[in-house]
Amino acid sequence: MIPVKENNIDRDSDIPVYLRFSALTLLIIILYGSSLWYGYVKEDFILVTNDLHQVFQRSFNGIHIRPIWYFSYYLTNYFGHSTLVDHAFNLLLFMCASCLAYSFCKLYIPSSRKALFLTSLWIILPWSTYPAVWISQRNDLLMEVFGLYSLLLLYENKMLRSLGMMVLAVFSKVTIMFVLLFVVFKTWKRKQHNWSIAFGVLFLVYFAMALRGVTNHSVSGSGGMHDASLQLGHFAKAAGFVLHWMEAMFLLVVPVPFFASYSHFFIYLLGIAGILYCLSFKGRNGSRDPIYLFILASIPLFMTPQLRVACLASLFALISIAQRASIVKPKFIFYTSLTFVILSFIVAGQLIKQRMDSPCHTTEMLSECVDKRFTVNDYYSLKRNWLVSAYKKLKGLDSSEQVQ
Image (cartoon, rainbow, N blue to C red; front, top):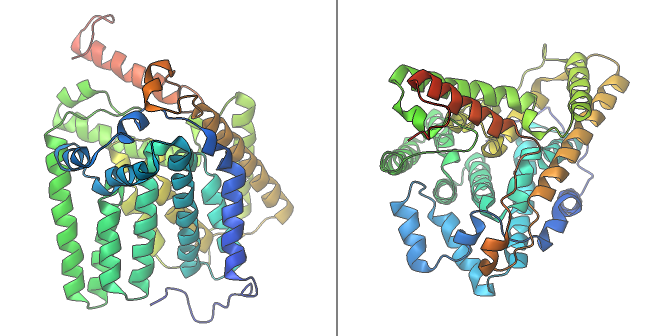
């Protein structure tokens, strides 16, 4: 069941598992531990005040079908409306997700050290900062924990538990919904047709529920197309969705919204150029599963190019690259370039973390809070303003007119 060739021996098996997990936990504490003392921001004020009636109301009558996400705030409220409890719960989920991510990497990367490094790199991605330090982004963490555990159970052929975990994952956040298609294909290929049908039914039921939520509510997203773009023709809408995905693919390689200055941008470009120069993707084969998972997990990026919805897709992309890439140039150049990229990521992540800091530690302090920008620069807002301006010109509207 494990998609690693039998002759691929783990040469680092002498490293105890608890030390590998402890290293990931320590890295998260070092990078994000100070967020325990942060306050509430944005949607936090609404989510942490949910009572049980509001949990059901928002879960099934809103645009997002996420009952597990909503219920998690009701659960933490038993400890009081405490920012410390909510942030601690997020960090604990992130630690669990990272350990599961390492275990998933090990399915495809035989070396424990390489799998540990790959997971560490995933942890320090700038867009991984959001679920770590922002209470409202708990949906990503819940989805990752349940989704990755479900995939691990799938490879262990523990199908009933895998299905149960996947139910919890899709009802935490919609972005894992299309990963279900991978499971349907995988189980069908194994001739486990009953389980394939079961996962397929889950996909269809959730897809119908999500479609109902979208069609019954107006959709808007920061960094994506403005609401007014919904008035465009079908071809223009389709083109917009494709452009969103293409933009997101570019941003995954060159994450423009996360650079603080031109020097920051230049250091990163120097690093990524050096890495690409040193790597070759010829002569090495690996499982295609991570590629399929990346493609399916990236489908939500057709709706918005916001990288904070691409955390899980990023993990699958890193695994796929690590499987196929080999260093063919001097290793000194490669590791120096990699250091530049890692430092750029860490700086960006810490800048994002600073922007998530808030003095509002009670739900009564909403009026005292300043709504901060959540990216390092103004990329998304500038792009959105340009789109609004372009739409007004297309419709012949005055630049001062409000778009309805």
